[in-house]
Length: 149
Ligand SMILES: CC(C)(COP(=O)(O)OP(=O)(O)OC[C@H]1O[C@@H](n2cnc3c(N)ncnc32)[C@H](O)[C@@H]1OP(=O)(O)O)[C@@H](O)C(=O)NCCC(=O)NCCS
Image (cartoon, rainbow, N blue to C red; front, side, top):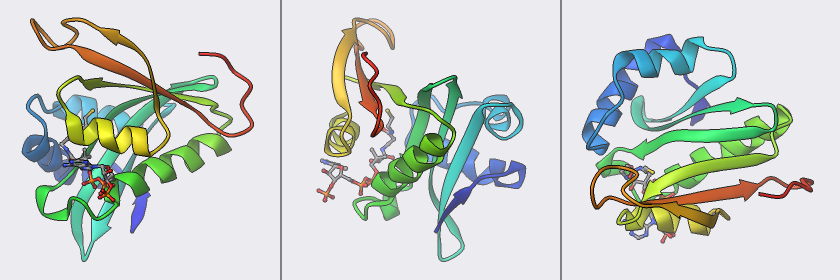
């Protein structure tokens, strides 16, 4: 089940971040997803356990995905794909038309996920994550959008 996350989900989301990401967001950054305008997190719950989450924010018709992660034991079951699809439907209802994200160049699983989900690479940033750690920049235009990247 995927649902909007609330402040009571912050500990589970922090645990997911810690398990999945080399530089997990701190509590303030996660709290912000629940409390600030134009910020949202969705959480995937499987048999009562937090299996994955996605956090994003938007301004006017543009969204930035901040983080997405799925706990190791729940991977390759379509959870991240479902989180992205639900994100897109939430955003479309809010009038958002373009979704942007960055991913580290050597993160093959995430790049495969994004490309399979219809995200298109439009640029790159050398040393974006630190010396020798480049970023790939991806975007997806939601249906009915005439926007240019
Ligand atoms: C990337 C991540 C979110 C994918 O989560 P997931 O729930 O396993 O992804 P899905 O099951 O929805 O996978 C969808 C597709 O993405 C691709 N994919 C996902 N993981 C992959 C892997 N390890 N290797 C190759 N392709 C992969 C496949 O095309 C997959 O479809 P398939 O299983 O039918 O072949 C997960 O591996 C993760 O949490 N990684 C660590 C955190 C991270 O790097 N987040 C992204 C930061 S930018």
